[in-house]
Length: 444
Image (cartoon, rainbow, N blue to C red; front, top):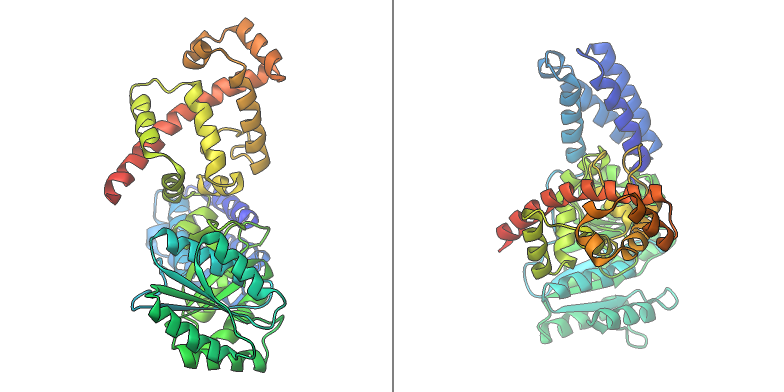
């Protein structure tokens, strides 16, 4: 999502690192470029003005101007201000009390109904009893859509009765939630293509009946500054407690994510990164700021791995890494595992810029298409090897490589590239295995 913004900022930082000493003029020029990059990313102009002013003031201090690494100090201040811009610390919804009520608001097309099902799937995975309420009674097929999604994730659902008003549905659903000892009740409310008085009155009446502690706006990140205007309008009318941004896996420029907290003072709780029930991530401002600046999100990557990796298999792999016996068969298994874990585009965002990884060319970080292409070729090449060759890559002399290339439909140069990347990946996997083992111990 932030690819264009990230590239622009990294160009600014590269220039700053080239200076042995920074002047007020250097900083002023850099902040001008940062301002342009943020505006091009569709960040609200008032937010951009406040952000660049704060960063410039911090960068003009002695800590930066007299530092032996002034460029790094500027990046540090930009990172800290980005974290502040995105909300500071990670926040979650208030799930105290039973049932904990979560009202989801949003316009048509924001992904509100799909998000309701994603939340239900996430909390059900945490062994919570979840109840869905289909309170969008005007959009054609909205109730049927949520009913289908509820069946897919295995949660109960309350649907409107004939001639039942939205507040009446809410009251009935709340009673049913208490009877069924539901831990969390998610209410998918009605939407419009634009906010109008009728919608606001309906939502206010529903909130009066429910007294929900969580009033959460689901906003489409691709709508840019318009999403900020929608958030502000909903917040003024109903008092939002949190935000969920959807479609961050698309070509959104990211302005909404960087503007909405400042405008509403509400935390971003989750972000949607795909259409599947599992494609909902908790929002961590510090991790997102690191992604934007090309620092990656290794902790997030490890957490994703923990969700999809067999722990016994990981323990075996960790032993093989320590014993220096990680071979091409293991490498193939890791490539297949990465494909199951999350889309290559998301994986790319979570790795620091410049980190050696499968598929990377001379320019550094590969694109999602390049990673997919490499994984496909690597699988064909390794599957064309004998078991002994996979176990002992040092056996791969010139004649063996020619035979493997012919058998896999690839070039000898691509076989050579795979062997080279395998050596780099072996080093990376060793570090990754140590980090994951440490996190597994801390979570026990």
